[in-house]
Length: 607
Image (tube, rainbow, N blue to C red; front, side, top):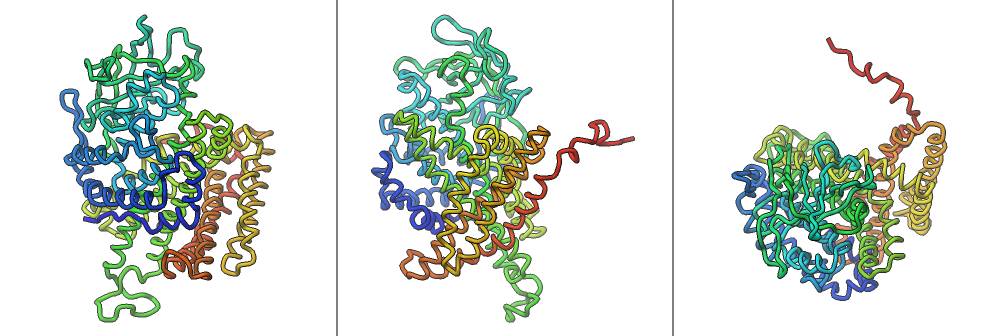
């Protein structure tokens, strides 16, 4: 059985040498205790927990799955014990406020933890991950009484949480929500309706589950303007926070899914369940989406995680498996054949996985710095700061979520390809990574929805191209400084060309959309993918620049081989993967009529 190894060397390279997280944490009130020694200890211990506890449960959890019997959901063997270790270790409260039992560390520390957990065992990581969404919502929008009742047990991991949005008739289009909330006259509400695809909707890991539910009040306005947000606990707590009677919310069934089978994805039935309004009436979506940027960064991990895991396992296999001789001559003459790793096409697949995993990780860590400032702004009531960084993060979020999950699927499939026929067999674990990763481009908004959010809302509607201009200016300023270094000059020159092209493409799409509104939808996917490739190119250039500087100065914390590998992978990315951006540039400018002129009834002719 393959095993997971936390990529601590690459993580520390990005944190300490590329993005200067020690200096970043010094600018944050929550960063006071995030000293280099503390961060290093946390990363090491979290890596150990993921390697020794979560990783071994990944394949067995998939084989066993979750079960529903007599209205009770049971998680796979070993999950309860692993969750107890997780909760007792204080991991759930790593970035939570100290006043509610957390450690008060920056939000990015939680992302680092989530990356390792999600890579080692994504289905397991979803249980505490959903709780974070509930915690953030209550912290920002709950009453003082609600905070006192719910946040401490959620922070301690004794209670879990969910986000209940989707219904049978609506996923992305939440304006169609039908769940009703009737006032009871005692400050509570009776919620009736059905929610589907609810991750962690029911399980046996915690003593209580706090559902955050979208529903409609009587006579609420139609559409999204009439949706409110409610807290609906599985067990109703009393005034002292102790568990009381069972609420009228039950798991009706478990979804039979392609992957993430160890994560309980539930159909939840609310039959007059007691709930409590959180935030203003009819402003549920605004409350729900306050932390959506950080939630989507979390989902973007499911692009980086499978790329890393599949790469680790494929690399080990390529070193051990022998087949034929390398075209350039025997590499291992004493063996019956050369290892797969000596074949150029296998190298192509492995380096693609490596470039995606390490480039994607850099994108996440770049965005996590912005998230730290945004979260601190909200936590301290500095609305101007929160809005400033929310806007910066808002532009990157659909790129991270859409682009990285698409590439994560590619990397997972490449892992199967490296294994050949053995990758198709369950015992090796490679096909499970493919199955588990497929959902990542679907939930928290499909790639198409992310693309529309990026191009339609963030670029055209909200900023008239300003978001692209601001970000490309940052890239161009960086690139100009690298022109003097012969090692990084090729990256810098290419980046300068791409920043000019990105702005030109934005203007051309904007002008075309004035005459044909379908252009926005027809160009959106290619615009998102182009944006992703350029953003990753920027962050590979930053890694290459640091590697070049450390090699020249001889003062790096890593070996020369490590830095040379960074330069080589950056060159591979620029020469082999970045050219894909030009195909997307061409496609996004293609008129929408080649998509829309064929009548819907003429899309298929069957007997």
